[in-house]
Length: 264
Image 1: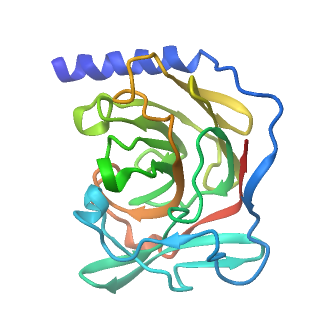
Image 2: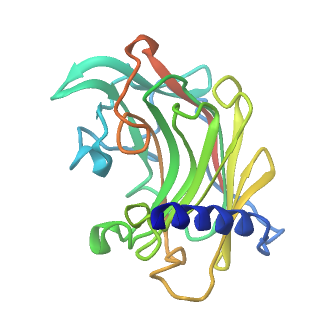
Image 3: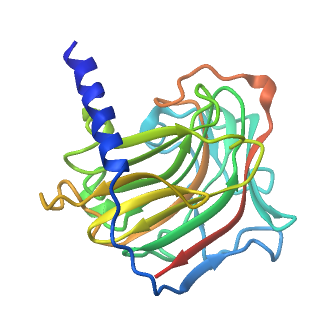
């Protein structure tokens, strides 16, 4: 019962936060972007890769092996393709890709826009998210995590937005989070966006405000988002969030990204 009441409280808390707004600057300019309109592979001046299975399936008991092979990640017809496949590699039965700007670019505050179409099928877990540059020093979740978009197919076309910090995070069930259905998220492109300042983070889809997380002044243990963060794009298969039932008939499946743009 206490567990249920906690999540009932979090749902009300999230709804209350989603109704508030931050004071985001009006005079901003494009400072970084990738339009994916050149070559056949992601620009190595902008993107790095995570390879393999990571520790404990990247901390989530995920079922895929990440590669940088063109079968899993490529530029095609002006879009970045992150494709998950049913194939054995290492000790895993699936492959996919995870791109990140770590070591190439990071930012403190700004508007981040990613236009993407999501994969569909039981077991898929596409994500567009951010982690603090200081993760190797302080670890997760103290580094802070901003989930610009997560979707798990056990709730089709339902998008999750969350932030995680040392005091507010999913292992303790206290993360600041919200979810809502976005029509045809897997059949059409949508623009997933955050407006991020020292005072808060607003989460948007197609310019519609969905959720707001505010800096309530309790310090970096609650709001570490006052320092640089880098971007991550990936498609996971299975794991703690989507569960471990995977429909093998869906593969290959892909997340298509039209562009990534950062304004400050």
